[in-house]
Each structure stands twice: as C-alpha cells, then as structure tokens.
Image 1 (cartoon, rainbow, N blue to C red):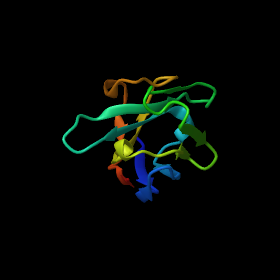
Image 2 (tube, rainbow, N blue to C red; image 1 turned 90 degrees about the horizontal axis):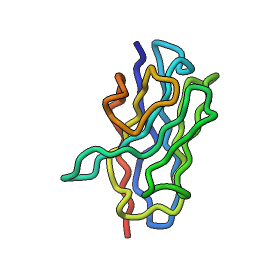
Image 3 (tube, rainbow, N blue to C red; image 1 turned 60 degrees about the vertical axis):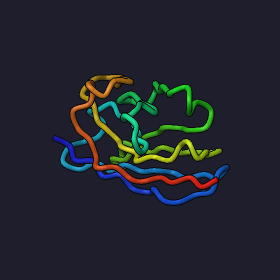
Length: 124
C-alpha cells in the first residue's frame, strides 16, 4: 500500500506558473501509474492528467493540454504537475492518485490510493 502527500499549492496570479509535487511512501512509486485530479468549489472532482508507470505515456484533459505537464521521478518516489499560464478556472484542490494499472486512466475508479489534496488558488 502506498501513501501519497501533495504539496506546492498556493496563491498565484493569472498567467503565472506553479509546480505541484506528490511524494509517495510505503511502496515504490514505480509500481503505479499516477494521475492528477482536481475539485473546484461546488463541482465534482475531474481528471487533469495521468502518466504511465515508466513515464513514457501521458494524457491530459483538454482544459489543461498545452499548459500543464505531468512527470515523475521514480528514484525520488515523486510525481509532479507543472502548471503554466494559470487561469482563475484552475482554482481547485488538486489530488494525486495511484493506480495499479500500467498506464492509468481518466476515470477515478481506476485509482485505489489518493492523497488529501493541495489547494491552488488563481487570482484574476
């Protein structure tokens, strides 16, 4: 079983950049595909990005494609979400999640392990 802890959230102005991190403990991160999800106030949690176990395959939601980059460092047991050109609509709690599948998925149901989230607020 793996434990996930997100960090790096905060307050940033529109157009700015930020990088979120998700550190894993308890089990090697290399055995999991990983995903980032977010939940804005009053909305359902939604898929943001996912990365395969090896890091060779990534996939993004249309709303963040070209602005966000998911990456992983298995040696550091950490997954990252680099975010550029941030918009107020990106304001949400961001969660990382781990899946025992090889590639991960856009579906929450594919992920068995979740962090508690980190808040990102983008001001206009």
